[in-house]
Amino acid sequence: MIDVTGALLRISDTINVNYPGANVSSVMASRVGNRASSKIRVSENSMPRLFNVSAANFEASGFFVECDAGNAVTTLFHFERPAGAAADIDAVISRVGTEGGGKIFHIYGRGLKLDGCTFANTKIAVGDLDFPVSWTPNGSSNETQETAMRAYQFDNLRFHGVAAGVRNVGRNSLNCGGIQMTNIHGDIGIGGGGAFVGVARDGQFANILSRMGATHGGGIVDLHDGSSNCAFTNLGNGGFKGADVARLVRNPIVIRSGPIGVNELSFIGGTIGPCNRNGVHILGHGKAQNIAFLGIAFDRTNIEGNQYFPIKVEESGGAFAEVSIKLGACNFKFRRETPAACILGGLNSAVVTLYRDNLTTKPKGIPWTQSNIVVG
Image 1: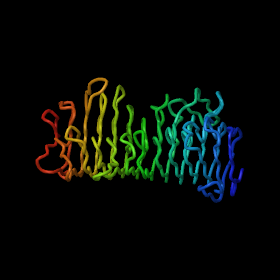
Image 2: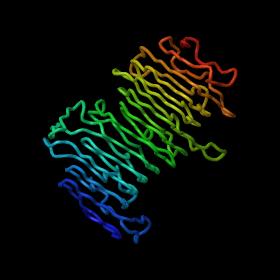
Image 3: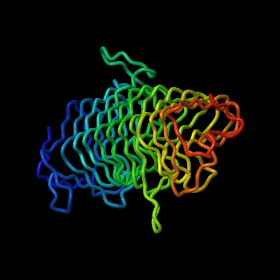
Image 4: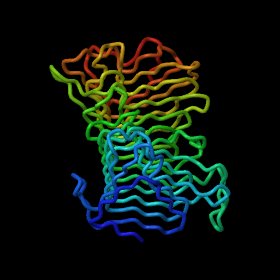
């Protein structure tokens, strides 16, 4: 156990952690200025990793990490067991603040918890979920490539100007499940698609707020082909459009379908918009089934023009065979901006079905769909 309370450390070489149960912690931290306490300063901008952790049960808590503004490469916490070793990591990063650098974490293996942290101005992403070359079972942890990645928890985090959030886009992304993400605040928006980007399977996402978007490419979530069986509760996307400044993202929620398809995705409560283009953009081919929006307020989507929609379906890389969308107790409003041509637009085809209930409302004069879309 290493106590860094009151210290100001300047680090120019990677710190290798190769024994289990390592703990680097502080009881208090101050992040401002050269006299800040309980702070690690990365003084080498080309350093690939700060902590290179190759053993299980690492914990970091209560201190601050700072990188130069020109540092776009350093991963602060890299978790990877040696080739052929059991790949459990079971790391905890709690009450850690960061400024700059490439990524907060990159983990090869299972077991990561982030709690009570503030991450500012990362140049690549908050972090990546990945998988080791080979998974070696360890005692009772008799796991396979298909079942091992299932313990990831992200709670009470503030993202300030990060280039992207948590990503599950690696080679084993389709087998990575059990992601829990709650209470995320992107106070000047979250770039790169949002708080979560990639495949989401059997997960829970709640209370994610992304406001005052600093980049057009930001958003709340960007879900990739293979996403299924997830609930997204109380998501919030907001912004500002004034005479002199516009702080709006284009597409708050993106759902990408492909050869595998996406299905059973439920968005429950919260607000989508205002935004420049589509509130929800379903993009790709194959099947996007049972995409449900329950109790969602769609507020001033498609500000850039009526070629965009609160919900848009668009083919890319092939044709859609089936798209089914459900609306329950939703509301659509547009205020002074250009109203949408319809609520659900884009692909005007009978392969698209919209189901809605009587509690879902919209302004008079705006149709629900285009002519060939089936309304159930």
